[in-house]
Length: 141
Image 1 (tube, rainbow, N blue to C red):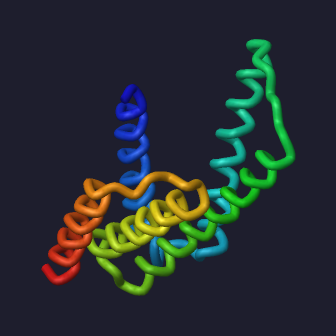
Image 2: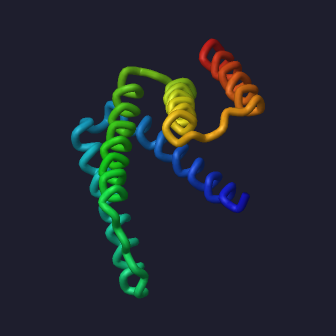
Image 3: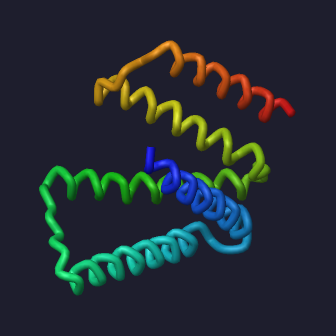
């Protein structure tokens, strides 16, 4: 379970991103926000590729991986724009972000089970029921 530390760091980055989108809402146009987001992700990715290239690390790419990466880029752009619109419409971050994230987690879990044939266990079902109960409590405050 060495991946847990990376997941925790990523969760912190996700929380910071949500907070930044909330702080930007109604203070910058959605199109300019998307441009800045794209520039930041492009420069980060370019820096990483160049750093690995300079260290002699190979950069393999199969067509299926490239296409999935393009899909990921458009999907994350949609997430960023959706967060901006949600927060610009007045949603509090303490409600909007959990609803969006849990909805995404639930859909991703279903896709994993249906498309990737990941196992469905009683423990998983219990976990989903507990999280849904928690989300109900958060939403209804």
